[in-house]
Amino acid sequence: MKKFLIITFCFILSMTLMGSVVLADETMERIGKTGKLRVGFREDSIPFAFIDPKVGKHVGFSVDMTYELAQKLSEHFGKKIEVEPFTVTAKTRIPMVANATIDVEMGSTTYTQEREEVVDFSLIFFFSETTFLVPKDSPIKTINDLNGKRLGGTRGTTNLKAIEDQAAKGLFKPKEIVTVEGHAPGFLALKTGKIDAYSTDRSLLEGLRMKDTNPE
Image (cartoon, rainbow, N blue to C red; front, side):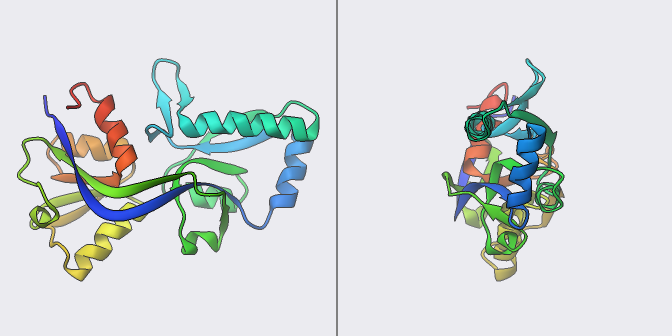
């Protein structure tokens, strides 16, 4: 069974909660009328929001914050506000907030100025680096060792953009940058040897590693 190491890549990311920038008043009015808070959760952003197979629903730090938010909204409106969960991906989370399919995304979304043009963000509640996860027996020990290797990142994330940008600048010269559709597929690609290193936030990589049957 493979064991995994985390290789630090020096970009600090700030995680926030995300809501609509243009429909805040209408959103609050709708929540008050319907008694429902429509929330987007990722399925594989451990430890923030993920599906626990034991209970078959979303759990995690951001999920806990969601129910605290619903409680505060209940107090504000003087009525019970229920959480209505929606599954989002890195690719769909911002469009689903922007087009009002959901009221807020509660996960591990990094603030960027580009994203703030279409959605609004809460105060920052978590900082994390962009890092790489590699098998423990991998020859990759430093950033320089990424040269000639196949690197993976999730579509629609700042992590993927960071490694693409730094590769373009010549910080390292990978053989290939592979785009995956989520953290679980990325981790599977790493475990099966389709990629040599998988990149996302350090906190998320720690979650993926600890969930594995042999995380050390």
